[in-house]
Length: 501
Image 1 (tube, rainbow, N blue to C red):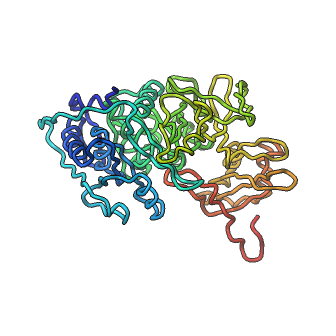
Image 2 (image 1 turned 45 degrees about the vertical axis):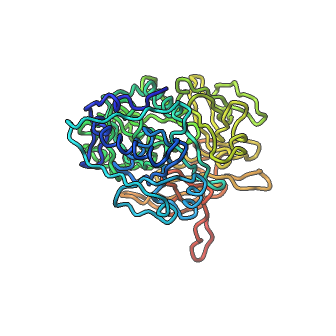
Image 3 (image 1 turned 90 degrees about the vertical axis):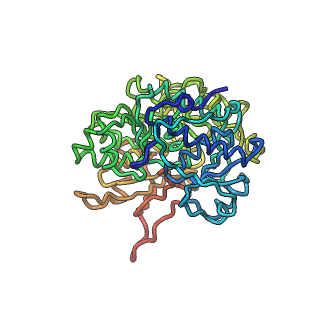
């Protein structure tokens, strides 16, 4: 049996959680979470029940999830910005026995109808002895049920066992040289893998600490990294802001430069932002690759040569392969041959809750089909091309990844944001379509024309990779993790007197 949080059971006085001016050491966390875990156990006899957690970015959410894990009861983190229809589906599908929430939280209808257990956190004195903690269940016991974004249907509940969480966090300890001395800084939401499992449970498993900013700002990042922060987790939209501001703000650039590790995830970080951050700080940003179903699969290692633009190599104990359209493994490591990523290892989920059909369809033998397309270079680094369904464009006999065209477009000084999709075309099979948010910041010139951007891509890459259609928007649709929602891309209304470009 793998104890998830050794420092908690050892009563370590080292800092563990900090949200604003409220903080708990590992010892204090044990004092607070232990009785809550006991109460959860009393309300869910037999340990087979599930509980919902109203996952606001607060100390209460972190304590509630830790208590559920100590009690051996599967927790279902719920996005506090969730829509009514999606929430109703999640509650009906997971059938939680109760909901954990901060005392002052107002819960929407489907959750408000459940029995409620308030997570009231009063910071105890360090001299307060923690009581005995419950015995932890086996490694295959469900720990969390995290719902997918539901882009192709109702969200599916991904059942993550304790084994997968422990393995991923220990593999990242190796890849990132993560220790108890590290202080992680982030402002990620706590209803998803990135912010909750990596960003809160990761530091707790290492015996280190996390400083959650509550709300992201470049000023808050600079303040925490200039103090005692050693690691920063973020998504590309955050790093884009940091890249722009670091070039103008020496204090921010200095704070980022002193961080031991800068990690970006949940979507690809554009090469332009990599370059801006490196120019301003002298530091590189490490990228990693994972999914809700697999947790972390690959990462650029902290002790490895620069691999900017890739998501690195497989983590210890994780097996990764590329498979072609015929289902055959791709042996080439030429950085050009595209295949679907398939994964196996102890980091994988157990099942989709109540969906044996979807679970069976997700696997090729023992390999999980990720639906992500990638290439592998000679050093074994993987570069994500995009989602098979939305980012791999088959045009004129070529397989073209949307990501490289997006990077080329972002290299144009008049482009602030870019997304690329495919559209049915009678001659080409699919035509390349670009969705552009023009740069409007200080010093921005006139917005580029569609022809200018098309020619720019043709010069940067190859003529067959140029967009055939360019749409201009004021913003790209994104989810809470900053991922572009390509299925929601629609042309803006054309201006009076002329069509969209």
